[in-house]
Amino acid sequence: MSGTPQLENGYVKIANEIMDALSKYRIPGEQMQCLLFLLRKTYGYNKLCDRISNSQYVVATGINKRNVKRALDGLIEKRIVVKKDNEYIPTYQFNKDYRLWRLLSKKTPVVKIDTVVVKKDNNLLSKKTPTKDNKDNIQKKVIKKFISPSLAEVIKYFFERGYSVESAKKAHEYYSAGDWHDRNGNKVRNWKQKMIAVWFKDENKIKEPETPKIITRENIGALYDN
Image (cartoon, rainbow, N blue to C red; front, side, top):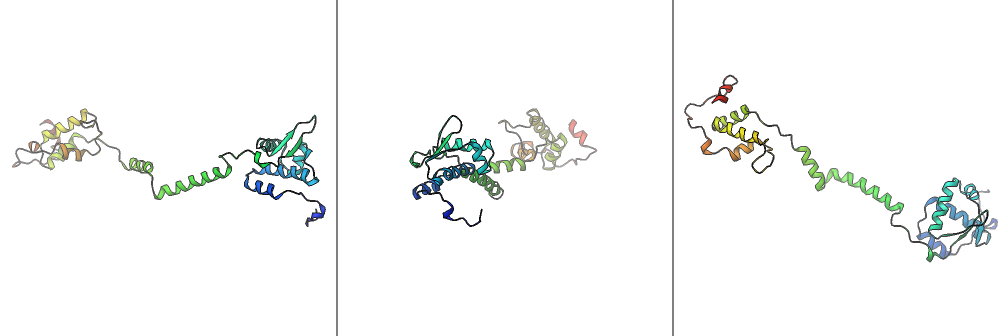
């Protein structure tokens, strides 16, 4: 190798129409390597076909024999290369009638790469502009786990707002029996809000406001018994 290739030392004569067709047809790397070597062995010597062993492809391309076979099978399947099996060494020929080449599959490496990029972009975008699914997930994370209140908590909440201990007991008993689900079967998320909406009514107010009771740790037990 001189490092300064010259046409005088040999060249591959290929019609521009074929080069245009090859430019528009995506051929994977190892298949292209084997195709270039085939063109070198045929058109490079002004031949239409040549008997080429897999070992010759291995030496010329540096691809291992297994991948050489797979690359050649791919070219044959695409009808870019025609193979004729001989007794020992097969004959290969480049099919210059590009109209007979098989159309590319929709699942090309380019599409796969773009798909990966889109997925990454979506992951980045999802942090800034959540989709509906992401919003649902975020809302699920925000919702705190419901902890049912004790009877003492309900009584204290009722009493401090002017509602009777008896109504507090009834409310607590009602929701406890239903595992803190309302009459529609919906899980109670905020028990204080539920008490305001359902139980804070005039008929449940304390009847004797002139003698209010102060709930303390010492007298809370007595309220249970009333």
